[in-house]
Every structure is written in C-alpha cells, then in structure tokens.
Length: 337
Image 1 (cartoon, rainbow, N blue to C red):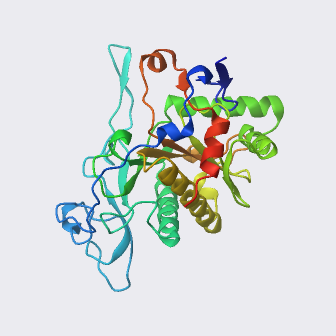
Image 2 (cartoon, rainbow, N blue to C red; image 1 turned 45 degrees about the vertical axis):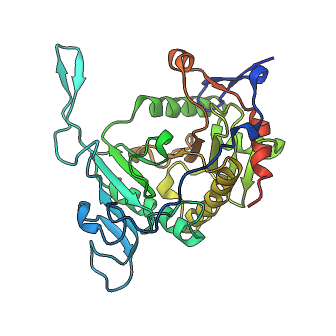
Image 3 (cartoon, one colour; image 1 turned 120 degrees about the vertical axis):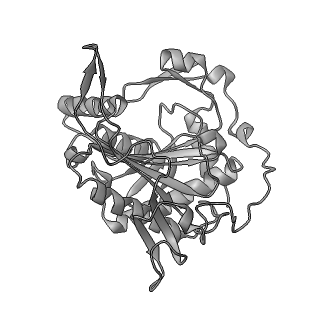
C-alpha cells in the first residue's frame, strides 16, 4: 500500500510509492566519465586563469601572493553572468495597477572551491572542506550588513542534471532584497508550530529522529544527518545542528568545521553508494533581519539527482519518492569507503 507522508515542518505531502519502490542499489549507475585533468587552460576557475573572472571579493591564499594571481586555495568572485546586480532601485512598481516589478538588485557570487580542475568533495581533504564552509560564513556575515538584503541563499550544483554550467567545483551565494514565498511559507509554518506547541519544530524533529534511529545517516556531537520521514526524493538528506540556532552565521567557527566533517562523511556515502551522482545542496537560514528567532532552525539539504520531476509533481505539488526513507538511510549507513 502506498503511503502519503506529511513533512511536519512544512506541512507538504509526499507519496512514498511502496508498490513501485526501488531498491537503493537500483540507483547505482555506471560511471564511464573520463577523468578530468588537474588543470584546464580554458577553464576560468583554474589557478593561473584569474584574469578571466571578475576581480576577487575574498580569497584564502598563500602569504605574500597578490589578489587575482595564483597562490589561492579558496577564491570568491562576482558571478560574470549574475542573476542580480548590486546597483538599482528597490522601489516596487505596479504596471496596469496589477503587475508588480522592481530592479533586480542583489549580489551573486561564485565560490571556487579548489584550484584544481579535477577536485570534488570526495577527493578534497578535510581541511579544504572546512575552509569552504568558513568562507560561506565569512561572506554571509559581510552580505547581511547590507540593509537592502533580506535573504542570503548558499547552494551548490554538481553535475549537468543538477544545473551546473562549469565542471570545475564551485558553489554560489545569492543575496536577495525579498524573501521568496516558499521560504516565507517555511517560516510561517515553523512559527505556527511554535505558537501551538512552544517548541521549534526542527528541534522536535531532531529528537524524534534520534529516538527512532531508523533514518539517521551520520551523527556527531553537534550535528544530525538523516533522511526525512517525508523525503520528497530518493536519498534526500537533511543536516541539522542539534542545538537550536536559527541563522547559519550564528554558528561559531568550531561548529562550522564540525559541519564540514559531517558533510565529508555524508557526501562520501553518496558518492560511493550511488556511484558519483549529480546533486544539489542548499543552506536554509532565517532572513537577515530575523536572525535570532525561537521558531526557526537553520539546516542544510542535500538532493542527489537520481530521479526526475514529472507532470504529477508539477501539477499537484506532491512529490513521489520511489525509495522508502528508512531503507535509503540504512543503505547509506552501510556504505564503506
């Protein structure tokens, strides 16, 4: 019998298609991609090609090296093809007394995660991944100081099916002057749960997952990674700080390093167990002007791109998951690497 499961934090429904459920092993794919070179002279993100990108905003580099030259291990630059730009007017305008628009004001940055063209999460060392997440936090702290911005979205697209346009490993930060409606929906549902129960719904979810243990993938003293009860796609993973923190930048550097350790462990399980799938991850944090609230809890979501969205999902908003979350978690826990 199929199950309809509801996400307790968002109230969204998903279908767990038990009648046509696949074994986790069925998602392992043949990986016949040729190995990448360590350096690609035509790649704008490779070390030595710094002149092909806009000037860097931030770089972690060797002492004595100059900006926009080799010698870095993390580099952040404006996106050359930015979705939003810093200049413009925030005034909202109505057309025909109905349609609303405004200038596309914001920041769109690219974090180049490694100088090597063939670097990926699974072959980076732990220190490099820590530096990536510390750089996220540093830029988050800087961008939130601009009073024009309400949201800062941090995300990574890996692979063609995840929407990436350049192979060289990178992630992105976008600051927006508005809070998107689906984020506002999450905030409102979390606030409603807090008003009704006096607790953060994500804190309760973490405690319940620790109690049942069925869907946990990896756990440390301060972080929990698990397949949600109502996961909307196969092997979707939530990474959640155990302590209540509503905004990503409020987590201290020591815990950000621990988060990087958790991400290394989880991403290795995905890489090995599912044979290097394309994936996205996103950090969900409270809006810039709501950074210390009792009702919301920042978290990171990882979505391996092993299934596609079709007409039913687009028409209904109800996603169909063909892997039972408990079996997906068990599969990933047992991956050896």
